[in-house]
Length: 138
Image 1 (cartoon, helix red, strand yellow):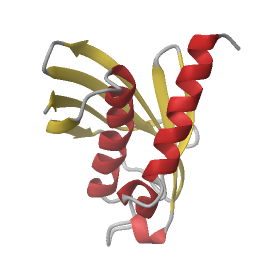
Image 2 (cartoon, rainbow, N blue to C red):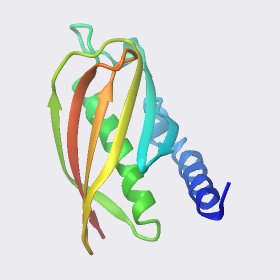
Image 3 (tube, rainbow, N blue to C red):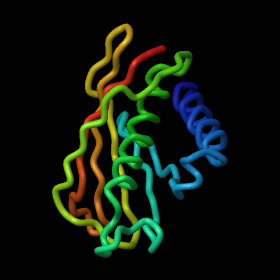
């Protein structure tokens, strides 16, 4: 493993460890990988993640996107404090209990603003939710 990959891996491990006692851990998120600048996280969706009609709650899906896209931003701007200013979510198909995978990547960044996109898939790879996020350096 080269120095750049070692630094990236170390940074991701630090982010995962520091996130565990936060909403990330409460929700049940887990870091899966970073490959070709695409972050992948996962959630084992359980009964408490569902809404009354038996599908994963939209708030959970929105949070998953925000979490995954937030990691992208933290990797792109490791020295900055950055907050979400806009989260645009499209629910395209219902998602159910089971393993969900979330991918996210950088779309654009300027001095103060960063734009990302993300997608949530079920275990078979079917797209359920997609969104974009805008983040501001504070």
